[in-house]
Image 1: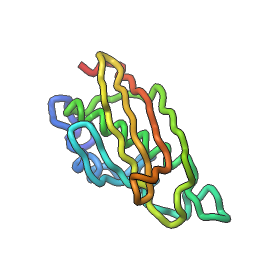
Image 2: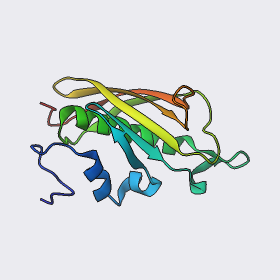
Image 3: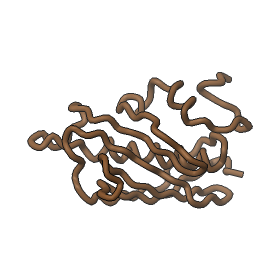
Image 4: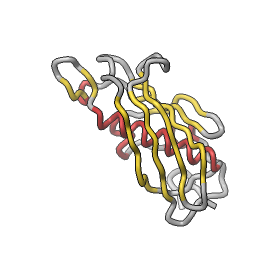
Length: 150
């Protein structure tokens, strides 16, 4: 078992270490990075990248990378609330897009875990491109831990 790639559940989850250690994977390919966190929330950033444009005429990012950002931000929120890493699967992640992202701007995703049961974690969050009062999207969802959270 590698301390970087497969931490034991007894270690407190540290998002700064998690993001510093990972280079591969979907989030790594998209360039998703760590910004900030609290006891049950995480804030991540998806840098603007022309390879992720979905609307070429307007230079707007595609919706898929924004959804991936929010999936990761809410996952990290779960691990922070638990104070440990637990493998889990996204059961449901509903995203309501309120407006397109602004061309040329990074997207900030903040995800929080507001409740955990024996095997389900409940999450919510929002994405914006500079002003949290003018969100791009809201998310709500659930994760399931095959081995349970407790």
